Length: 223
Image (cartoon, one colour):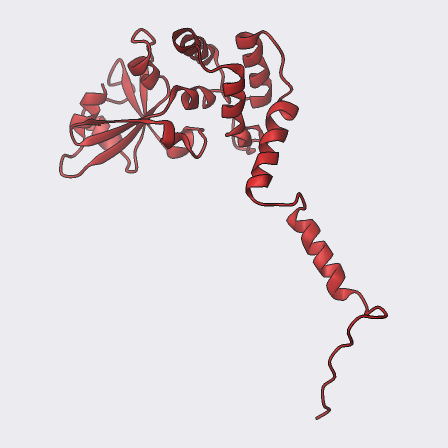
């Protein structure tokens, strides 16, 4: 199906496609781990090319699903771990299994749990410590969703995942969110003070009257 997609794209320029979802797991780990679609992110809308080649949902048994970049919830450094391969005039980026798994936590349907089970059975990874580190890299999934967004409950899903994989509970706020935010603050070189607190201190200093011993304001000559 991916080769058919590449053949459907114009050959007069190179293409770079992100293949995410379950397809990279099937390609790289277990050929029997089947999915009904191939999730693809492209810098250019490829829907028209897919439709002309009969690759979209309703046109093919296994179909191509063109997606926006925001559909793949991954950490900023996921391309560092990705596998790159060339298929004719297209470069394919296949995210590392850990990034694919973490991207499934917001939804966490049964097929997503099966993906975690399969990867661990095949590779022995991720361990609990590796998964904690990976989820901390996408800590913003635990922020409240937009009103217009019909999203799952990442906090509850994370606890379900820990029960399924490690047979234990996890305190998401203490073990994931708080350490991740502390590392982020450290990376910013912050002292822990918020911008609001700093501005309030600056404003109070600027409006406070001179105290004894303070330098006097410079005098100006009268016109």
